[in-house]
Length: 366
View 1 (cartoon, rainbow, N blue to C red):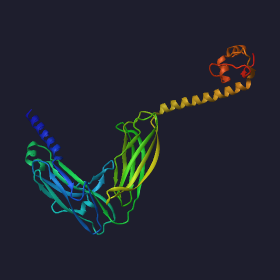
View 2 (cartoon, one colour):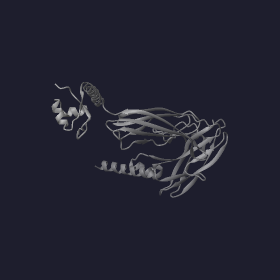
View 3 (cartoon, rainbow, N blue to C red):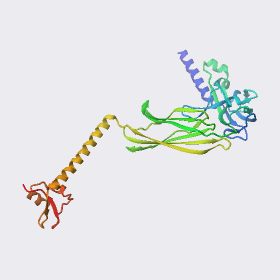
View 4 (cartoon, rainbow, N blue to C red):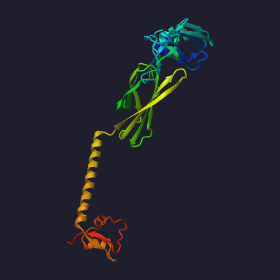
């Protein structure tokens, strides 16, 4: 029982540390930048800037600062490579005087850094980030965590950083896959996309699907978060779930994808173009499709047979001039034919009133 209580106490402390660790400090770009860094630097040149880190906790903390290349999440949204990942661009272009900084409780520090573009850097746009990381052990103290038996976790906050190396802009984006798999993953249906950026500019990709068909849908539009497509990046199997897919029906999925160049200097999307594709989707099980097809064939066959029958009857029957005392009932008795058939052949409508002097078709007398 004592071991159980000790374990529960350790777990409780670990959870409380993990939850507070991510709110112990904040990071913002140094002036004049606001929400992210946007630089335009020529090959061989350098710029200096800074980040502002504020300790929001009650204890001193030590944070580690570093830079990393940009990448994409599984859904194509912007992300950073891990610290241990091989860095090729921003991850090697940014340097700090000291990789670690101690910040007193409720205090803030300005941490400078230098961005240097190699002389042989290829012109184009590059995305990455400045990261600030602190472990839960740093935030709460190693001794306390060690006594509780908790596992050290870390919190990382990063600021998006975009760098434009001047030169000819090459916008070359391609849209590859657009397919549909019905209820293939945990009974959830999915659309699949793939995109590729062969140019040297960063592309913002915005996919949207509009659904139309029968039976009508409550939600007819599906959207993905904006995808940041780095130069030279290929994203395969981007998934867009259709959680409200009906059990049966016939639909047309119209996908529209908007590609935009990201202008780093102005921090906005420019030169937008939209591509559109369509695919048909049959959600009806095969046996229901067979039944519906059989019913349709029967109805078409019956309609053809009925029309041929009416045409033959109208050819065989003869004209009859209506007298003042005639009714559809009296004529049907005289010519030994059902009054409904007589009305149908002559295309009579309710209340089947006959006008004297007009003519109708009647069968030959037996």
